Image (cartoon, rainbow, N blue to C red; front, side):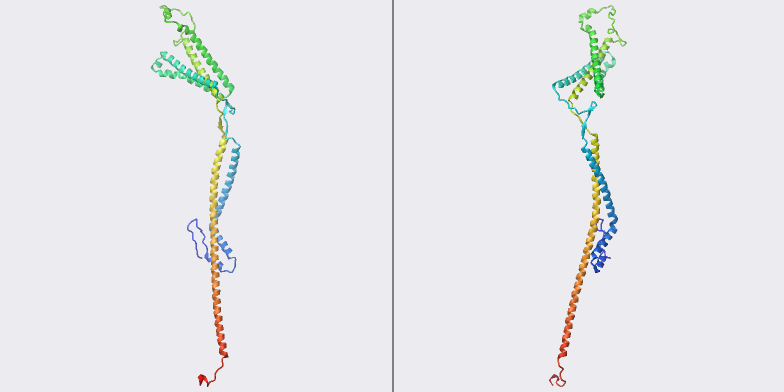
Amino acid sequence: MSVLAKKESVETITPAVHLEFIQNQAGLPEDAGIEEVEEYHRAIFLHHHAGDLEKFQQQAHIHENRLAHLEARLQDTHARLASTQKLIPATFEGEADVRPSSPWNFWDRTMFITAGLGVAALVVFGILNISFNLLESGLVTFIENPIRAYFWAALLPVGALGVKVGWDFLQSRQARNIYLWICLGTGIVGVLVWVAAYASVYPTFSKSINEHVQSLSVFDKADNGGSALSGMNSAGTKWVDAITVGSQAVAEIFLSAILGMYMTMIYSRHRPVRLAGNPLFLQLDEERRSLEENVARERLALGEARGNQTRLENELTALISFAKSMFQKEVALRRDQSQQKRLLLDQISEQLRSQLETVENGIHRNYNTPTPAPGRINGK
């Protein structure tokens, strides 16, 4: 058995063409020799590569099943995405934000700007007033470190912001309205108390210097008023001053918060309609991207398995075709040799026939020629 092809790499045809089997089949008189050669080399190839071919077929089958399952899920995901909205209205004040907002007008712009200026004025005035009172109180802490007075005065805007944040946390419109009216009432009461306290001491502030000098006396005068506003508290401060400062702080805190609420209400009437991303759509879209990546990987794996299977099948086809060509070449060579032998035999037989005819003609000629007498031989 001679080997015409040898295995050099994985990509080459591993089983060799068996020339001895081809020569044996070419020498037989049957006409089905080419089918025998094909079956024989197919069996030889499958003997070497049947396991790899079956493995690639099973891999292709597995990837086909996975790909069909993933494509079915991907189609279902696409269908669900088509029926799901990408954006949905955001929740505003406990309700879906689907109502269109009105455009800004001159009055609303003016009131919004005025309320903002009012908040800034109240905050600045309150900080300056409280810090001035603290610095004029005579306390060593604030006299030595004036910055502390301003930090203490910063409690006013922080308190107003806290009141405003409390209103923002309320979701019900009714609760917000009740909260707003309570804050408004508290602020107005603080303003009225501050006005009353300031009015009680205004006559003293309005006296001229001469009137103050004339009112001075070396004798102790009893307190004719005897009112609580003119008395002293435990800290040595008049009650009227404490009430004035306290009512002023309350009024500034609550009125600043009320103005902030009003600005929010104006903006809410003209704010743009907000749309938020639909969580269901985002989740489905993420699932779609994951499925598309898995489908791409499975398609590549399926293509690789089918490519390996096709490669082995092409190797088998090439091997069988080469074996057939060798068989046909061997048959043609034997046919030529037979024809040459037949021609040679014909030539030999023709020569023998011609020689036999020549011999036969000579014998017949000698038989017909007469025999001369003995005494007349050579003319004597």
